[in-house]
Length: 251
Image: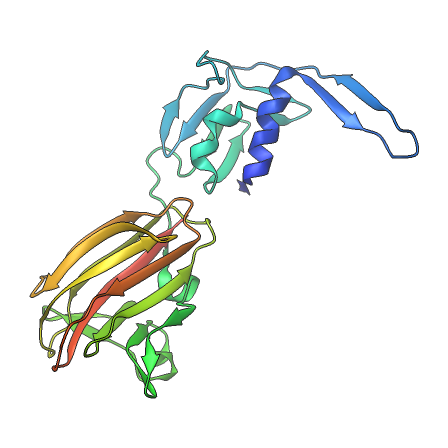
């Protein structure tokens, strides 16, 4: 599997012209143009399991080709897949970006893959906890319960009085989606607040909490460098907790 960097697929679009201008060493102070022999073999391009048309900037349909075993396609056709995995199947003459047809994308455990880089902590108290299936996380955080169901992979936010609670995750533009089951943690009081999901400072989603039943959420975070999850708070004098169970992230 191979990943495309943004600068790399822009370069691919330039190479569609079938020529390469290569800068020589400073001592030679000259440039050269090399003719490329393009091989066409009806290569198909797949994006998340669906075949897509390959087009140039003008919208004209083009056919991908190979030069010395390297597949060339217009940069425009790959821009949405900047953080996707890439596979060139020579036997099938197919390029796969993301999962193959019928293949589900792999979901990674959020806590193990991108743990919070910062979260609410004051007066020697943490108002954020990460739960993993591995040995209680060193803090006794082994399981939490929502609507009678145990969750071992996820996070829990405790709403303090007159203070927002939040957590930051550095995604660095490497992921496409997050998914979780959002709900009220059993044994704690409910609170009329909202949970906000921010991507690089922009609101991606708002969810009203209160007595919310466990609800599955999927959020597009393509290109997001930093994810922030925040719960607003007023005068909350009771222990209120809300969790994100089965908290996963996808490339």
